[in-house]
Image (cartoon, rainbow, N blue to C red; front, side, top):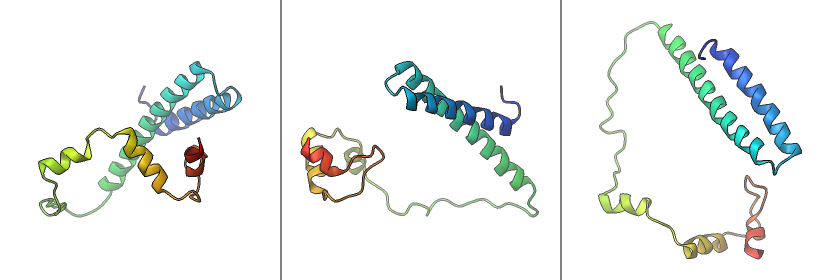
Length: 122
């Protein structure tokens, strides 16, 4: 139901908060993990719809005319086919290990709360 975009965002945020609270209390519950993942997607979609609506509403209220946006020179540096393929190639375990061990052990923790030192020692 698309309905009131702001109300949808509020409702999905409340549902997500509830599921995340439940997940904090029972972090190994796969059912709650799946519901939370679905709720995150739904919340982000509702948020995006509201954002698009508000941008359009603001744009429509602007006086004046619009002009075409020329994008030819927007990205002056372009990759050739080989360089582009190199960006999406498979990465070996050795490359991951090498990257991890090249980082200093005194770095701040990542989003999971662990530092590089933790991974180096395990």
